Each structure stands twice: as C-alpha cells, then as structure tokens.
Image 1 (spheres, rainbow, N blue to C red):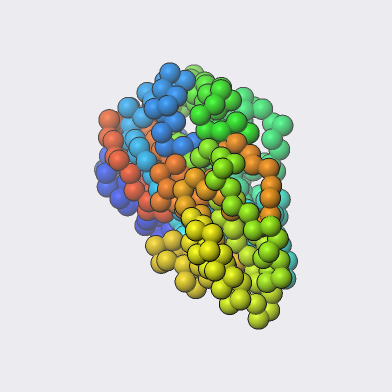
Image 2: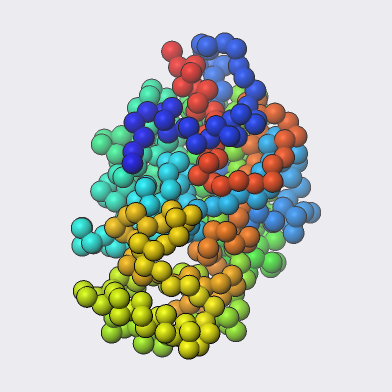
Length: 395
C-alpha cells in the first residue's frame, strides 16, 4: 500500500483537521507568507508525564493550553521507535508500511535490518511525508527522524542529517530555526532521543526522566523564543508528539524459557515486551504447541499467536517481516528465551496498555486555542495538517 498523492497520504488526519484547523479563505498565497510546519518527536514521552512532571514541563503544558492537546493517543503495535516514527511519517500501519520492528528479518531478501540500515528496499513499501511533499514542489528538511536518510527513487529531503547523537540539542534548535526563517522550509521534522534514554536506564518515574523533561521543556521554550526573535513564529505550526510510552520493569515479572525453545526456532527477533520468532522449517506448529503447553502448565500470563492468528485490531499480520510466532505478555510482564538482566524501563508492549500511550500538542496559526481531546489512535492523527493547506495553496 503506497500513497500516490499528498492528499491521499493526508486523509487519515481529517479528524484532527476538522477539530482544530481554522479555515483559510485565500486559495493562493505567496511563499513569504506561507505557513510552515514543524513536527517534533520526543522519544518515549509517556502520556502522563505532563502530569507526573508538571513542574518540570511548564512550558510544554502552556503550549498544550494554547493550542490543541490530545491527552492520551494510542500508538501502533509494536510500540517501538522505528516502527511508530514510520507510522507517523507515512500514515500507514506497520503491516502496510513495512517497518515492523527496530530489528527485522526479511525471508525474501534473506537479510536482516537494523537501525542503521539505509537500503531503500527495506523502506519502499511506503513513502514518508517529506518525500511526497517534495515531489509536490514543497521544501522539506529533517533532523534525525528515523528513515530520513533513505533515498527514495532519487528523492531525499532538501536537508537531512545522518544520525549522530553527539550533536547537541541546542545545535538542532539553531539549525531548525535557520531552516524555517532563512530558507522558508515548508515541512521540518525534529527528533530528540529523550526522555526515552532516561526511561530505559532509570525507569519512567525517576530523577533522570525528570531531568530530561526539564531539558526538553527548556529546549521547546528556546525554540519558540528563537522563532519569535526571527519574526517567523506567527507562520509556523508546531506539532509535538511521541512514538511510544514507557513502563517500569520488575524482576519478579520476568518469564524465561531457559533455551527450551531453541530446537524449534530459527531466528529470535524481539524479546521482553514481546517475544517473536521465526520457526525452523516444519517446526512452527510444534513451537506453538510447546508454548501453549508451557503457558497452561506454568500458568504464564502470556498469549501465544501465529502471525496469521494475530487479532485484527493489532493490524500486525499482513507482512512477511512479521515473525511466525509471537508471545505477548500481560501488562507489566516481560518474556525472554533465557535468563537476562533487566533494564529499568521499556516499551514495545501491547499498544492498548495505558503506559504505551503518548500526548500530542499542536500550536500555531492554523490551530484553535484551548482545544482538549482525551485521545484516539495514532494512525488516525499522525497529523500533518499544515501539509494539506500547503497543497491547496501551492502555486
């Protein structure tokens, strides 16, 4: 499934568009007055962080009160960084856009994918918004959004950076400001790896996450200040959201199979919040039977699925890169092939789990003020409303 026009790509955002956008009467405007869109991702920013860390996120909460605020948006399964950033960029479920985890195996390619993979063949089941927009004549730029380094049929954003976590957050803010003010980029995306890193190392309710949110809050305030100083704040729409939440891990809720699955498994893929495997030839049914017997005998709080039997609501069964067998633990539990040391926090769980949900804030000239929504599903609001308007105003 691949969108063939910008309008088709943007249809899923009509819900938020209808709710929040102020209609513009003029069908044509000059580039000098054309509104611009900045999409910001705060990796691993759980939906309730704005409440838990209210004092640390005052500017973010001010932004939420001044625009459109979605309190709790359900992300897509699997709740991981690359898949859900690609959902936001393409407007498609993971089974349709082809990025089904941070690490993948493709049985047709007989090759594996990691987060540094840039080969177009892994990504071209779908087009990201910056490519579709550029092909429509708009100017686009990305700063570290997953997949933004990939070339699609010779098309890349006008500006992009190979991922380098050593580049300071302040430099990213300066660069984005310059793109918007000096080059009048129509669409910018900006990625921060916090508070995800802090949540993994210290857990979601920790001093490190608190410190990360203080820093992010300051950076967003700095961004808005810089845009105001450059005289472009009134024409920039800003959307701030995340890819997934974060949950605390507990050793007492870790399930291990002590390598008992190895006789049936060809490749292990995900583990922890989800255990997924490609079976050896002819061994899938035996693997499923063994897992079901173990689940019953040990009263394990897990559900066992084949790719084909995954519940339709997950939209996670229609791509060859989805593993043959998946074990989904109940909220709070993790499952591994063998004993392992746990990190403090993680994501990747069932996307209906409350702690996997994220907020969304949208502020700027195209949005009403003071609109608050409890929540809806990410693929229905990956939200690039400015792009729809830009399409209508293109010369």
